[in-house]
Image (tube, rainbow, N blue to C red):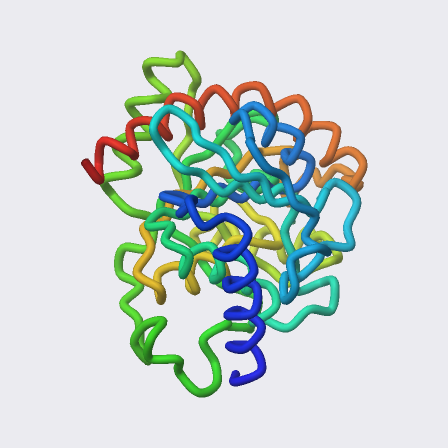
Length: 279
Ligand code: HPA
């Protein structure tokens, strides 16, 4: 944990030095195939993860690995195009390191977006789900090991991970933007293999509405830091155990690109409302 902590502060020191007049209010993480949209937030700076010492780079197609700094409608935004996953062979600490850096830099809110499969049979491919809660099925947790007390408590409360106030704001934003927004529970798995029909049936029985390979560790680390969390799943495919269709990563990316427009509109409607929350 000490090595992990040092890396976090190395990256934080670099960013604070390079951008002394900038302190993010919110972090937006754009998931698989969704990263192109960062430029919609009018960034004034973009940094490849590789140039920030201590930052962890993504190795996956559909994850660019660029940090954008933006001033958008009164909100200072750090937008991450590209995230790090357990299935890349990364440790839980590495998966959440970039988020921790931005949280410690000042971001009070983390907006986590992901591409996900729909487990709820009533949800359609191409729609967006507001995450109301999650099930961490990865078997991993970024808070394991010696606790860093400056970051948060040993046993952080998880009774309300996805901020009810932010969820209300997002629902209102979706209504105003005429975007239909499903609501449900996200299940995070380690991957990289997709689910078997039996797993799909089991996960649905456990209460999940969408499934993907990210978000749950980030949400735990963000709550540990005391950040408010908002989550959106872009439903790229549908998993019905009794008539499983084949799914490929390419297909997931293609669908994610199609949902991009709605996701950006939703974020553009929601983010300015977040700034009012802190006013
Ligand atoms: N399962 C797991 N992860 C995913 C899926 C899925 O069906 N779709 C997009 N990410």
